[in-house]
Image 1 (cartoon, rainbow, N blue to C red):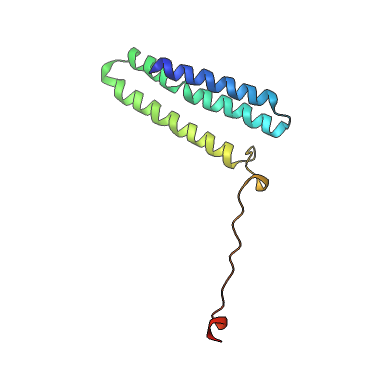
Image 2: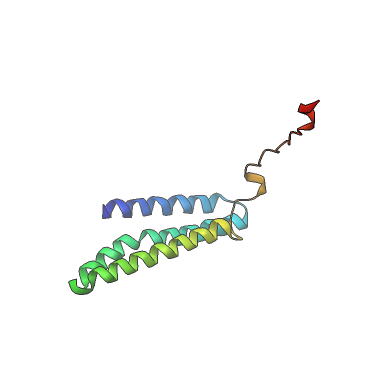
Length: 112
């Protein structure tokens, strides 16, 4: 499982690096740069937690490992929220779905 996690991290880092190099717009390049750094750091959480678990005294192991895991997940979600909803977000009015216009039906047309 640990080796699979490291493999997925390497694959993701390669794909983000490729997207970063192929992108022409500077704003999107910064998005890919921060996405790669943030998610890469977040993906390394599991191997670091395993190493931390083996190096700690069993009396403190559970509290420290759970605390580090929860803190890392929280920071990762904050980073993704900031990336996708903040100023570096590639989501804009040009690439989102527009809501269909609602046509109100007047009841006077039915009464006639």
